[in-house]
Image (cartoon, rainbow, N blue to C red; front, top):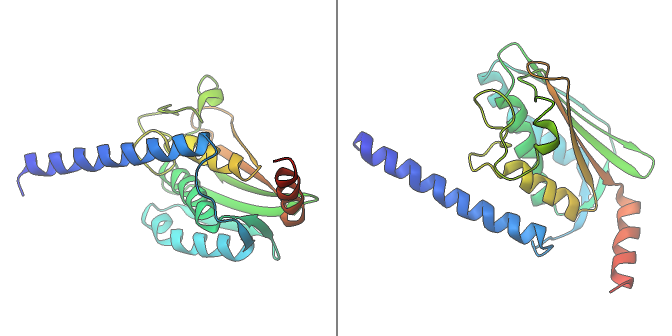
Length: 203
């Protein structure tokens, strides 16, 4: 294929992804994104996801560290949970230079299961940090903080998925070049069941 044909194909792929991401985000924000909630072994899902990302980390000369407690469970849509983990971990690896580290930790604290993705990468400026989950928002440097995608909607979609699961997400950084930490907090399995019951009762 010619260079022009390759560029056209790349532009078409980008536009298709953008349309799909916009549709998914609109459904999520309207609370209409289909969720297939079920008991999920979060420890197993996290370990499987991290194993999948080890080759990418090695290719980028980034050390991938896991600190996942045993016996972690959630009431969640496993595919959506994989999607947000994939986006956040890919994002962290993308923004971490060679010889850097990405640490993924998960533990249950009382009624909540907390997942943190911490990197030693490019960081986020104080001005951008409050806007990082907005649509089409750039983070720092030349690369877009787009959670593994290229449409500028990755982190907005991640936030919407977290909130559909009655969770919260936050980002922290000490500034450019000082790394970033994304923290996701979900209700633990029993608390999630209570929230679902209360939501159903209020309909």
